[in-house]
Length: 279
Length: 320
Image (cartoon, rainbow over all chains, first blue to last red; front, side, top):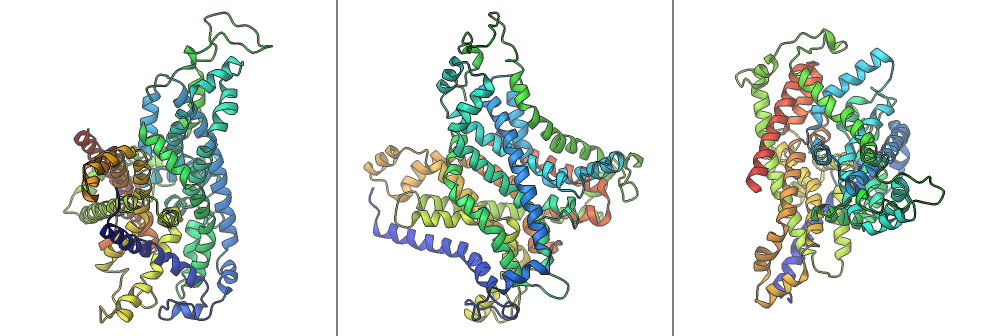
C-alpha cells in the first residue's frame, strides 16, 4: 500500500489549505491582541508593527472582566463537578444493571440534547422568574440558576460516554470485588472508577467547556452581577468604539486554558467516542 | 451492550467479614439501587428539560403577552390562535418565520454537507502516520475546543469592512474587488455566517470520523491493496462503507445542532442578524424578547420541534 507521488502531493496541498483556513483567525486573534488600539482601528496589517501588551492591561478596566471571569469560573467548575458526579451514578446504573425503563431513560436523555435550546429557554425563564416571585428562591439572574441549568446540558453526552467507558471495563473485576465483600457503591468507587479515570477526566473537561462557552441561556438568565464571559465580552464594543485589541486579548486569555485542556485530553475523547460508537 | 450481566446473577452468597448474614434468596435494595443511582439525573432532566418543555407547549396555547409575563396564571387560554398567527404565511409574523425557516434550511444543508466533506477529507488524509500528523490533528481540533463566542467574535473582526483581514486580502492584496464590500449586512452576511459555521463545525466531524476510522481493521486495507485498489477505490470500497454507522449518527447530530444554531449569528452580528442570515432560533429569540409575546414565541418553538422530530423520524426510517 505505497503512496504514489501524486497522492503524496495532493495530500500535502489539501492539508496545507485546511491548516491555513483554521490558522488565519487564530493568528489574527494573537497578532491583534498585541497591537495598540490605533493599529486595530486602521487598515488591517498582517504583522504587528508596534507590538505591545497594553491591551492585556487595559482589558480589565474597560469592562469588569475580572468579575465575569470569576462568575464563569465558578459557574463552569461547580456545574462540571456536579454534572460528572450525577453522570457517574447514572452511567454505572445503565452499564451494570438491567432494569425496567433503562432503554426509555437512555433514549429520552440523549434526545433532549437534540432539542432546540430556545424551546426550553422561554419556559425556564418564566419558571425562574415566577418561582422567585412566589417563593423568594432566586434562580433568575443568579449564578445558582445558571449552574443548575448548565448541569443538565452536559449530562446526556457525559452519561453516554461514561457508559461506553464502563462497558469496556471487564465485569470480572466487579465480581472479584464482590467476592471480597464489596457492595455496589464500593465496587463503583474502588474498582470501576479507578479503571475509568481517563473517561471521567475527559467528561469533566467536556462539561466545563460546555458551561464555559454557553451563550443563549447566559444572555437571558444573568444580570450585571452574575454575567459570564460569554455575554460580558460583548461589552468591549460600545456605541463609539470597539476595542478590538482588548477583545482579542480577552478572547485569548479565556480560550487558552480550555483549548490546552482539550488538546491534552483529545485522545480520551476519541477513545470515548470510539467506545460509544461500537455499541 | 448485550453482554451486560446483572449483579443478581453473580456471586450472591459472598459476604464480607463482619456483615450480618442475609437469609438466602433475599437481595435487599438490589432492585431499587439502579433507580436510586439514576434519581439525580432523572430529577435534573425533568426539572430543566422535560417539565419546561411541557410548560412551553402549554404556553403556546396562552395569550402570554407582556401584560401576563409576571403572573402567567392570569394569561387567557386561546387554543391554537398563536399557531394560526405564526403559521399564516400571509401575516407579517408568518411571512418572516417562513423566510427565516428557508434561510435556516439552506444554511443547514450547506454547513453540514461541507463540514462533513472537510472532516472526512482531513480524517482520511491523517489516517496514516507521517511527520507532523500530531500537530495537524491538534490544530484541526482547536476551533472545536475554542469557546464559541471567542471564535465567532474573532471572525466578526476579520469581516469588518475597513479594518478586517478579509477585505484587506480581497481588495488590497489580491485586487479581486474594487469596492470594499460589507460582510455583516446584506447578501454577503449569509456567506460570512456560513464560513464561520463551517470553521466551527468541521472539526467535530473530523473528530468523530477519526474515531470511526480507528475501528477499521488494517487487514481490510491490506486485502484491498493486494487486489490492486488505488486510493479512490479503497475509499469507496473500504473506508466509506465501514464509516456508515458513524456517519449516520454524525449527520443527524450535525443537522440538529446546525438547524438550532443560535450562537453563531448572535455573536457574529451582535444580537440582531440581517434578514439574509436570520436563523430560526435567533428569530424566535428576538421576536419573543422584543415584543415580550411568549405565547407566539412558544408556538414557534413547538412548531420547530415538531418539524425536527418529523425530519429525524423520516431519517431514521429511511436509513434503518
